[in-house]
Image 1 (spheres, rainbow, N blue to C red):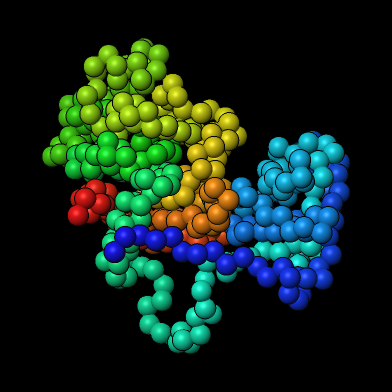
Image 2: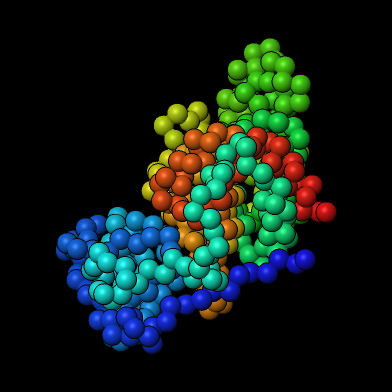
Amino acid sequence: MPFVLPAYYPPQFDAPPLQSAPNASLAPAPQDGVAPQGYHATSIFPEYFKIDGQWLLAEESRMDCVAVLRGGKIAVVEFRNLKAGDQVVLGRTEDGSQGIYVHASGFQEGDGGDRETFAFRQGRSRETAYSMDYDSIYELLRYEREHGHIVWVLGPACAFDADARDAFASLVRRGYVHALLAGNALATHDLEAGYLRTALGQDIYTQRSQPNGHYNHIDTINAVRAQGSTSAFIDSGAVKDGIIYECVKHQVPYVLVGSVRDDGPLPEVYASVYEGQDAMRAQVSQATTVICMASTLHTVATGNMTPSYRVVDGVVRPVYFYSVDISEFAVNKLRDRGSLSVRTIVTNVQDFIVNVSKGVEK
């Protein structure tokens, strides 16, 4: 059965109580980077603001930002990007009583009234049955390859295993990856695997440590830096396969954001976290599906800037968000941080990648 996007049911603005809701209040930002007192902070859900009698949807949103009226539209702006005089929406309620309405149930048909009050295994853990999740992901990715924007967030474990690395490279080649977000480590160890067939000095297939293998990742970084860029290093023929290789060859954008612990780093790594955040958001703002694997740092960062919806050609559709990790703590941390629309899968990410790569072609 082909994948079909769920319908979106907008709020009933012509019925009480929204029919009589007041216009939202606005106040100017007192200075650059500072919101006025009583500002409204945005969520992951569709939010509407009543301006001059019309309900406006914030079409590109993210959590923990402020709503600003710009050019007759609602812009969702990070605090650091506020400009003095920006007209900021005020109000701490979400039920329309202050001209602000948060619509958390737009994709739900019915009220779920047949759900039992008590039932076993309602959480997501290592004991959860994931067969349906895998089948849903296969169908979703087939659909999104042609109709969406699939963003993947990868930790270095995704490059440590030969089969997993080959499987993800295959996904890039076949068009199931539209952008990649990661840190210095994922790219470094993937390039190390292509250059020296090791990851952190261990053979990526046998796991045998190589003589002086602890030098391999920094030798790889040094070799890339000598070429001036990762693409130049790949064009030199030093690497002929792998995740980053396929991204470069198929012009798939990848964003590498640094951390305090980074070695090197590779030339493309963003040293400024805010420049890196902007680069990540440029991809997230297009995303219709996000799949995060084995990187708590980058998963939480991505989750905090990913709304539960996207407006595509004037139609509101859901953003599908998955967090995959072998640690229950890691996947639950994202949900605890407010990314309530995330679907969590507790499994080895290397097995997950291989299964997905095979499954999408069934």
